[in-house]
Image (cartoon, rainbow, N blue to C red):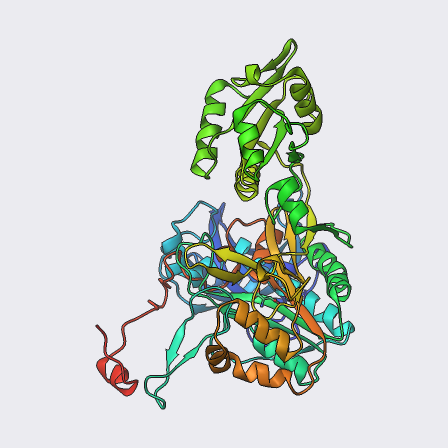
Length: 579
Ligand code: ASP
């Protein structure tokens, strides 16, 4: 309970008072959480960061404390001293960690008056988010928020301790820099001294951490702020925090091994037991079995390839798909499936780009399905066996291009499956290097252009694989990284495959290509979304709940009013004019 600071306001944390401190005479300070007047006694629940302690004011206590206390209102700031006593039998509050004790106040000081807050701090009733953010400093006073902030701190300090042990050093990288391509739009900061030029805020420290490896720092980490200007992406923040890591002289096993040791310690902070090493599955395998490169394996459904079963099918839909180079895949699921649900799922499949959805139910007297008559007995038996369908289960089949089948079945799997309790962590490895961007008719890097490619680099870049890896927890990607390119010629080839001409590559990334010519160690790393991990551990749906001062969903800050118009003079200095 004792605090390291012992001054006129406080000698001890109110929220840490326990029975073992009975008899001590602490001075405590904080906010009036609640006041109750009761049979001549006044009770104040005093709140500090550590919790809530009941203060009792007796009318007979001298110094006028009781009379003054009668005027206290919620959120007034006070300091009080007295004797810590055991609560009387029957008044012990088992809900409160301090519930066995109370402070019999002998003196107190009012340090600040509070206006009536716009929402109550002592209640957990839902408050409109805009209002919470507008008065975030009041929202943060809520004990639940204080606990989340403390949890976040413990996560970060655990990370620091674990990485320290393994020889990592924390290095800060610039916030005013050049564009770092992670696939989002940049935030730009116009330069006053170079009119017409802008700094970009980093989407990640990617290039700097690689340059640190070329600078011989060997093992780097940073709790790094990243900035990405994205529209309409659920639960994203314009600025967010990554645990960013990079190591020299390593291969995949080293980076994954590091995380297999680190993550269990981090998750344990939130009481989640997840012993490493985490299983690894290949990207192709993940797409086939789960229809996603972020598989939620808590759902006990796996997609089966049915190409073999329907290889010589007379059913046009299946035969046509297979003849056209497509696939026939499906899964079975248990649950309640009235006709209306099949119709809704068929609609969903169409909306996701499938031509249709074949479905059926395993009934005691056979297989009931609108397409039953098109399938042979052998095919039905093969289908049920391959999908593991049992009596009463529904079966879903999609015949389409492999990407469509994966997307549709992956989404339906999430929709009809019920996740088991607990958590699942899995590495997805062996990604393709590029995805084809249909809209722009060119390749995009699936991770980023600094990821080392693998496979036959003389062949079609569309067939290159990459040395990237993602860590997926319960169906969300919580971290991702790669072994990097460490020679200038391979880096140049990747730029070329991405359609970056030599000139443009030189213009944007000349410094990297140059640095690679001065002896770059083999290196690789990873970054974890820290906000998402803390949200998960805190059992919160949104990362806004675990960031002290987040932006609203619209990207604005209702508290400070950011972003705000700037005056003419500032714009002029920057050589800008608002349209
Ligand atoms: N910079 C990457 C990202 O932000 C992570 C990494 O490759 O280390 O996703």
